[in-house]
Image (cartoon, rainbow, N blue to C red; front, top):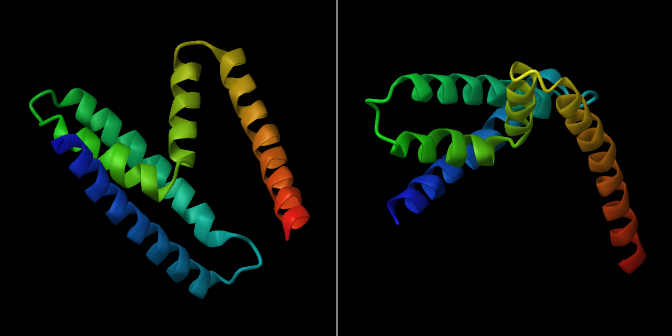
Length: 125
């Protein structure tokens, strides 16, 4: 039960951070380019890379930190970082084609999913 509470707490903090960073960056940089989302995605990649590597090397740290930071906080802050981490792990393992397929299909099918979602919403409204 404790892990669910830690994930929920991290998720709440990640959602709030996502909103604050997105608004702050957009207010400063404008909205012609999606700077807010871009900054969120890149900082999330740094946080997940740092936290999973740091926690993986520090066996003395409580496992609760994994639930709080990379799963809860980063999971709510941005899932793009998880996508990048999984791609990185495949590349490190020498699975170049798996990584390339994952990136290509994620971008192509993700864009198609957005497009079909828009079409579906327009069809019922």
